[in-house]
Each structure stands twice: as C-alpha cells, then as structure tokens.
Length: 274
Image (cartoon, rainbow, N blue to C red; front, side, top):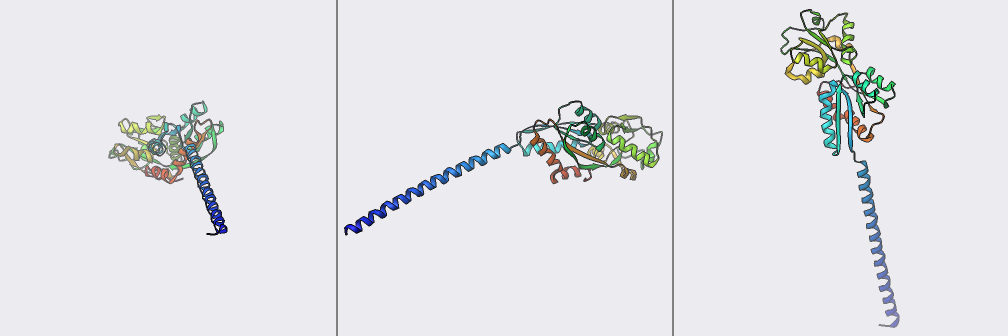
C-alpha cells in the first residue's frame, strides 16, 4: 500500500469515528430531550389532577340524583370528595347569603337562585341544567281515588303542601291559581321531601310534590299526574359560588351535572331536559 493510500485510509477512519461520536451525542441529547418532555408531561398531568372537597348545596328533590353523581365523580377523580347539604332552596339560599361555606348551589327555581346572585355570592352566570314538573303523591294504591287537582279540595282528605316560599310550594300555588282552586292543607312543609314523607308515613292522604320524588319513592306512594302541572314547571339553575375552596374541582362537578352522562342520571330520575 502506498503512503498516499495509507493517509487516505487513516483520514476515513478518523472521520468515521467523529461521525459515530456525533451520532452518540445526538442520541444522548435526544434521550435527554425525551426524558425532559416526559417529565414535563407528567408534571402537567399531575398539576391537572383534581383534588379536595366540594361542598354542594342542592334542592331536596335532587338528593337521589346528586348522590349518584357525587359517587361517580369521586370514582372518576380519586382524591376528591363531594359533600351535600340538601333542603328547601329558600333555606339554602339564606344560608349561603348568611356566610355558610359552600362551593356550588343547585336551586329548584330561578327565584331562589336570584337571592344568591343579588347578594353577590355567585361566581359567573347560573345555568339551567334540568326542569321538574309537579305530581300528586297518594297513599299506595290510591285508596281515596284521587284523579285530579280538584279532588284535593275534598275536606275529608288530609293534604300536605310545601311551604309557599319553597319552589315546590310556589309551583303548587301557581297550579291552583291557574285552576281557580282553593286548597287548605293540613300542613305546609319546609321542603318537598318532608311533604312526601307525610304521605309515606300515612300521616297525610296526599301531597303535591315533584314527579321525581314520586319516582324516587317507588311503591311507598302512588302517583297522579294532572294537566295543570304544565303551567308550573320549575327550571333548576346551578352555579359556582364565590370563595370556593377548590374551584377547578367544583367546576368539574358542575360540568358532570351538565354533561350527557349527568343528564342521563337526571332524566332517568324523572327530570325534564332544560
């Protein structure tokens, strides 16, 4: 081999070694970059993870549906907890404006939601997520043969209504006014569940409640629909409240309520779509 050939061969060997080194450095750099990207993605994923407790104040008629949705939410987001306070919407609104700690408010009427928004306790604009219609709850088997709203005016019947300040009571009064009927109940109850319980315990013969409550009671009561209820359908608004401790988690729960999955739970319980 000539001296020139040996020199050319040595040059190629050096060049090849340099290229290999560059490839190794490039691979190393790429690996570091991928590792950095993976770490970055993991951090972003961790930061997006929901956590904390969400306190929801909700109308009594939402008890069964919201309890189900709360469990679904906790299962979908480990590390979160949803606690509820159910009751008459007017009482809940008063508690919120009085300073009770809550993150979300779901009311059975725009009127009671307005108490909260007017006081400046809502964060953003409330949105209607379902609607609800009235129905007459009777004793199982309907032994008194109640067939209409007018039948409830029979003085021999013990009838219970929700308090007029509560959405179900206001709706019942609206239906009665539209029918030009006067009804004197044996008692006015603080929320729709309390009114229904009177019938379940056979302390009353009938009560004007929501279709969803008759549905939830199963065979404990009978149900009688009446056309006047179409004149008193209640919209249910929901909102995030100011001062929420875990805003992202609270907003995620509201999103579940309004989602197709949430709507499925609510409509199966007898609620109407907004």
